Image (cartoon, rainbow, N blue to C red):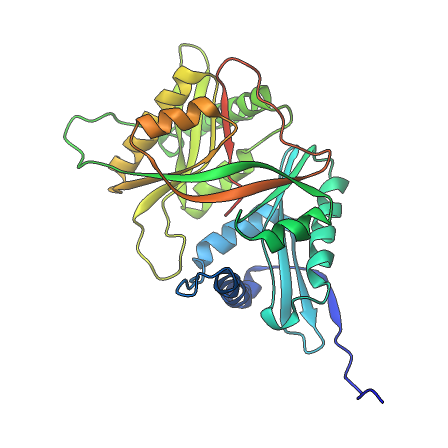
Length: 326
C-alpha cells in the first residue's frame, strides 16, 4: 500500500517584479551552483546577481518575466523571456533544486516559447553550457537544435596614456541627437538582420545607469555601435570590466573601429578589462579579436527552436553580436 503524500502544486506563470528579486537571486545562485557541482566543478559557487542587473532584466522582459510558486507560495521556478524586435531569447531560467526532475522545467520553457511565438519573433533561442549534455538533451526534446558557440573573450588593457581616443557616447549627446541616433541604431540592426531592434536595451541601460552605448559614425550615417555595461554583474562586487551586450557593425572596417571605440570607453571609465561575447559564426570577428589580444575564457552553446534560427547577416563583412545573457 502506497503512503499518502501531500499534493505538490505549482502555480504559474505569474508576473515577476522588483519585489521578487531577492527570492529570484537566491534560487538563481543555488540552482546554478548545483548545476556546476553536478558537472564536476565542485569548487564553483555562483554568486547572487547585482540587483540592478535583475532590474534591467525584468524591465527588459516585461510580461515575459515569469515565475512559478509552490503550494506554500515559495518561488519554485522562473524564466525570463526577452524580445528584441524579431529576435526572442530566454534567460536566465531555473528550477529550485528540490523540485527538479518533475516536469517543471518543461513547463517554464514551453510557457516562454509560446509567449515569444505569440509576439511574432522569427528567431527564438537560448544558451547553455556545451559540457552539460543533460541540458542539451532536455532542450532537444522541446524542439531546440544546437547552433554555433558564443565565446566569452576578454582583453586586459594597458594603462591609458594622455591623448587617447575619446569615444563618442550616446550619453553625451543632446536629447534631439539621441533620438536620431536611436533611430539610426534601429535601422542598422534591421539592415543586418531584418526586424532586430536593440533600442529598448539601449534606453534601459541609460535610464538605470548601468553603462552606455558607443558610436562609430561615418560621413552621413551610423557605421557601428556597441551597447556596454560597466556595473558589476555579481552582487556586492566592485566594477572591474566593461561588458559588451550588443554590437552592430556595417562592415569589417566598422567592426574594427567599434572595437577601438569600446576599448577607449573602458579606458575612459577607468576599467582595465573588456569582455565581448563573440558569436562564432562571424569568422572575421573572431580572428580580429584574437589578433587584437583577446583570449577565450568561456563557451556557451546557442540553441534555437527548430525553424527559428538566427538570421544570416548579408555578405560584406557585417557583424551583429546579440548577447543572450543578462
